[in-house]
Length: 203
Image (cartoon, rainbow, N blue to C red; front, side, top):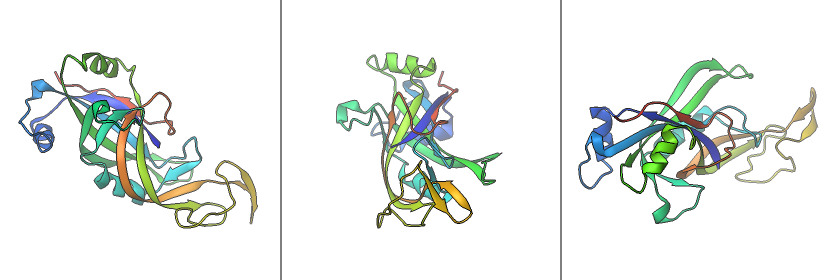
């Protein structure tokens, strides 16, 4: 699981058309509440892992149409929203490594009902702000020995320090490919520090 952050947003006619591709009956702007989520980025996270730009672009396609649930509990009655649009954004900032800092954004919608009014209020108020993504990596490369741990296992643990040519280095894993995306969850503590919610909302 990787972290995400949320931000409310207004719905445009173009976005409403994208939303209605997933709806069985056409929805109006007044019927939906939309928010934007930073699903993940290519910065090193709390688990000493990071996505490559290639993996972010693969997830951009895989997360389109995926469901939004709470706490990674995969039950039909736990579905609260759906992702209707995704994009990979170059923020214009640089990581410590000197590489461009990139984010995978998802645009999500909910249908306004009496039962989810409290959840919508909590998202708008910044209470429900953090999130996490469930996915399957196809490539997970160790920075110490170069082993792809999606295909074989090495003896190195992310976050631990090992001797390497040039001195001791902290082991990190690069998630260089993703084969499947399952869901995006609202959670309390995300793995990635910058995953959360931002501000724009439907009227």
